[in-house]
Amino acid sequence: MTRRFPRTEALIPDELRARLIENGRASQEREDFDQRPVVKLFTPDGSATWLITEGYEEPDGDLRLFGLCDLGLGSPELGYVMLSEIEDLRGGLGLPVERDLYFKGEHRLSRYTKMASHAGMIVA
Image 1 (cartoon, rainbow, N blue to C red):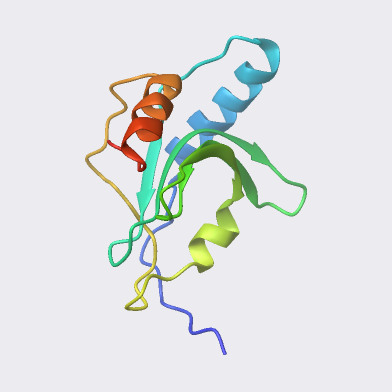
Image 2: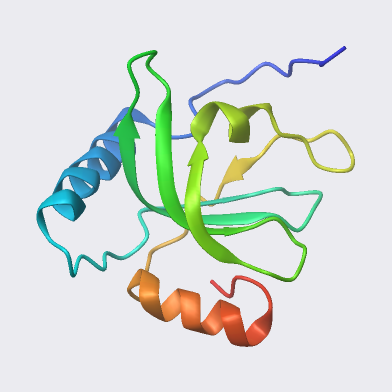
C-alpha cells in the first residue's frame, strides 16, 4: 500500500510550470536549444537529483519533464520523466522529493551534463 504524504504546496509551482512549458515550446522550434535548468528536484534522504529545463503538458494534466536525471546509480543521463512519477517517489526514509528553493541554473544543460558525466553524479 502506497502511503500518501500531504503536500502544503505544489512541487513545481504555477510560475515555474509556465516557464518549463515555454521552454518546451522553444525547444521544438530550435534544434540547438540549450537552456539553463529551471528547477532542481532531489530526494532529501537519497541520492536522486533532477535538473529540469522544459515541460510538456499531457492531455491528463500531468507534466512530462525533460532534463538531466540522476537516480543515484552513477549514470546521470538526459531524459524524460513524468511529474506524477516524481511526486509519488519516496527516498529511503519515506520522504518525498523536494524542490531546491535556492537553486539557480548557472550553466546551460549541456555543461551540467558534461560535469555529471565526469563526476558520475549531478554537480549543481
